[in-house]
Image (cartoon, rainbow, N blue to C red; front, top):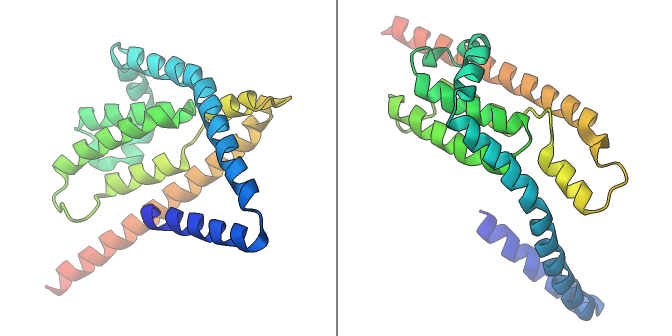
Length: 202
């Protein structure tokens, strides 16, 4: 879909620039944006390497196992299907940890790996399991205690107070996570009730 949307936006922008006589400004801004993108990438590289390295160290030690045990009561409630699936629980715990630390670049591959593990135990390969739906919601809501990436971007743009967004990020992500979890639980309960009704009729 994005392969269609972005070219349409670019074509519309160029046509509008030609009509309004601003084609030179568009060309100048294209090169300025390229330079800014490269500078931003270099500035973010250090922060990304730091946190990805920390996650790799945690992955090769007992930290993830301990964190998984700490999250066990919450994980068992969020993912009741995974009580015996330690591998999936560890991967989800790592994904949640990366999100909490605000490193979306590290959480994405961890989330994909967890989804692959969940898909192996999924009976209906054409539909999401309850655990897969919950993981998608949690990963999208992305509860963050330390919004590392956003802070790094604000630092690179010379913000006077780059950490001032921490409390608003807490509020936004906590509200999003609560709303998402409640919605998924309600949909799961509704689907289970529907399945029971179908079985009774049979």
